[in-house]
Length: 532
Ligand code: ADP
Ligand code: ZN
Image (cartoon, rainbow, N blue to C red):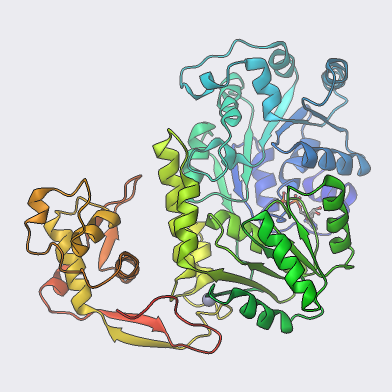
């Protein structure tokens, strides 16, 4: 059967979505393939349909045992021969499944990465590049099958640059080495540019076809409001959504319970959900929400994984999420039915400091640095003067129009003000420091703050301390605005150094003015920090 026939006859769908057809084409011509597609976009069919076109078995690596079982059950309902292997099964069960696959009676075999890992033994060894595993009986039996395709779901887990690195995924690079002829497809819903590149390299994908489906959720309106008087603002927001279903995310378990309680006293139908609750209570709350018997779920991020409720009208974040990936995924639970929906974030600077503290991973400065940078990118989102959708889409490397018209900044009015003098201060600091330092150092230098790294030579410079009148945070915003306007650049890499651009010179020579933009204050939105 051809892919389109399989789509209709076996899966009962009328047409392909997003890049599905092109991805499937790429895979069945045995090209290595990388697919970035938002959650709910339909990644599974991209390997399930090729699996049915090929003769042998398709191995699917998937990290979530619960979702694996759901997928296999759904496939069986559609009459597809599928099974999974994970550590919850007995040796006998696993051997039976592999036997069936050997006899050609299995089209898709889902395997948990830790299943492979367990046989390899020492987890630490995985991180060494030249580690060469002796083949375990399990791996040998997989390799003895006629494997037509290997699909790696949640492929971002292989990358240190991603937000969900799992060492056991590194093992997949070895499997790739053992199966050089077999086509691989890597799929993920969340990978920024660096992570995408890293996935392709780690899996050694050969001249892969790369597909990046649109991440735009046009029906979701993005809004940020100050966190001060959060509950009051929230109640104001909820007034417009009396009959609607919504999810409200809080950082802590205690906060979910308190807020659910507060909302109930204000007459709303709300329940809490977090991982510290009894399993049966959690299941019951989730069920009531899914059946629309409770309107509001006040939850920690433990809530939502694999939940497919189409009529969620809004997702509110009472606290700042720790990265854009999470924010995009969580807000993406709104408006699955395509109707207008809201994503509202309450933002306060105290969250940035808190998340940065949580981002510290002991004895791992590199991972810490990455996590801290992701917090900063998230905070940047909250402080944008430009289109929020554009920022989100650019984060996933998608080019888009300047103004979406469906976010708070796009529908705000702006005022302009002269920033030439502050711009000159920043640019001359960068120039004096010979374009060799990042934000933090430049800001300390401007503010005349001593830190252990500040050299005496720098302290003796005339520019040192010329910006003592502004806070760190205000300088940070100015630097970012200068980057956006093209007056400054950030060098790529782990330690992004500030560099002058071709437009800097004219500012330093006072030949051009720099105009900054800020939102005009409205009743619904107030700037979180003061004027410069
Ligand atoms: P992802 O893995 O990208 O999050 P899934 O593969 O789980 O998404 O698909 C999400 C939902 O969309 C599933 O219910 C799936 O059956 C459905 N779906 C996928 N492709 C199509 C299609 N072409 N037409 C209609 N529904 C589809
Ligand atoms: Zn916009």
